[in-house]
Image (cartoon, rainbow over all chains, first blue to last red; front, side, top):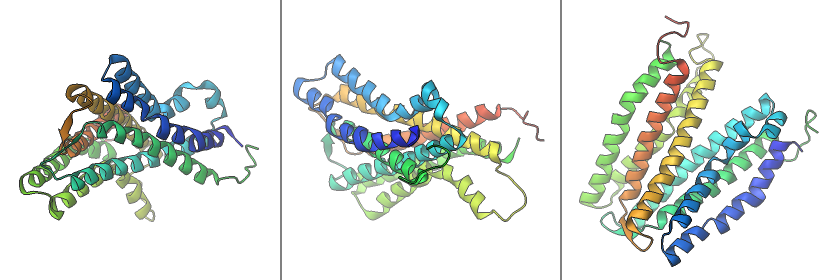
Length: 146
Length: 149
């Protein structure tokens, strides 16, 4: 199994579920203990890292770049773009659902916004890893990489 | 200036007016007259069309595969993909910033009008369009020095 495919499996089985469970923790902490700089800063940093972790893999990780040939790069780019398409549709769906379930003249808790953002990270990782695995053919052995 | 670059200039200026104004009008109609099918459909159509408009050159290329004249070559595709990815990075940062700022201003026990969400989405669309247009123009070098007339 080559590195990009292994990363996709790790993302699908560990990173997305972990984000789903522990991503809500800073929101709960801020709700219970009130907003402090540390909590808000950690939330902002973790969401930025969670949403843009693919940049690290593509541009900064030298070890991963060595294993990346042109085909891997193309697959990774296509998976990232597909994940962003689904992420955009998820944001639209979340927004319209909130709009329809609560009448336009009413209000919603401000905590809905960070929850939607964390949900977006989960959706992004899920779609990106599934798309990567689909493009590699799930578990089919490749002559070039095995 | 080649066709793609020309399109990105058009996208840069007209995109904003085409997405922002009708989208804001849809939110205003829903707020003023209550929720109904027409403004929600209008809003959904605008944000889906606007946010996924970057797929159009790829679809157009597949549809016009039989034509001999190439208007969207490998280099254009690479530039377009890079610009879209850069725009999505900016869009993500905008969403995180919008969320954290609202959270800090209102406080975790406060509430916001539900209209803030579609308006944030529209803002995201504008940011995405601007960032994509700008990234495309920067990659082409803004001027006309791309070997074409």
